Length: 222
Image 1 (cartoon, rainbow, N blue to C red):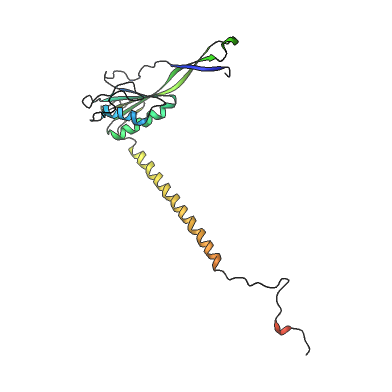
Image 2: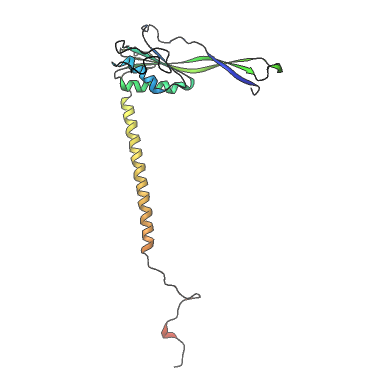
């Protein structure tokens, strides 16, 4: 592919895996360049009883649905992410679940076909354009104030993972305290060892070549 350059990418449309959704259900399409705070501002404006800010009343970055006012609250919202934006979509879902309590979650995994069109760097060389199709993983997450079918795969009840996150935060805090104590203990030990070396008796300088003989054994006449 060193003789080609990527011209453009076309994502094939993928139908929503959640049937019978209300017509006013917003769909937040998370992109690679989307900012989480813009996505959350739009989602909270549709799920919380707050109107959007006056300085940003229009469409938010990363979503293709215009934000409504506090009077048009929705009971459900859908987050979608494709490829590298899957992790960012899940992050937005977790943030919204902590801001709006009691949300039921239904997660669907799928693959979306992405077509990449490659053009030759030198058309006069007789090379043809190439179209490469790839199956990219995608995620669909439905958050609802109303109860969902708990028998469906991918269902999560409200608060089902609160204990898990609380335990994870507790373990992380304990690990951090243990590392801090270990660092403080290592510094104190080093200082004690250095001080101990200074308290030892000083070695008297002697003559090179052996020990000094006692005076009573000095040679002489008797």
